[in-house]
Image 1: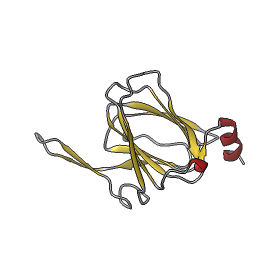
Image 2 (image 1 turned 120 degrees about the horizontal axis):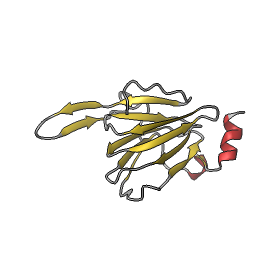
Image 3 (image 1 turned 90 degrees about the horizontal axis):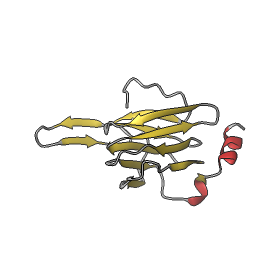
Length: 143
């Protein structure tokens, strides 16, 4: 992801992890709640095995949940929509992520074969927090 990228959509932000290059012994990336991630982390999940380049993930927003999304291997395209503005970006730098705040529709596409997505969430899973209907999201976001 371009480090000079400016996010135009509401309820979002760029996140930068602490990074140590330790050649030839690999790289170390650190995410600390309250420092690199602006919320207490209550859930962590990752997505891999995205061999289908036509796959589409996300396609929802949350009423209250905050998430930090990182591409820790490979790349994918993230599209954000706050109900008034949309923005598309490629995530391909494991040290740079995106804050997905409440009421932010997000869609993920164009996964590289080696793509691994890591998500840190501010709360436990709650099905009632999801908005999966685009028309309902737009109505709520524009209210």
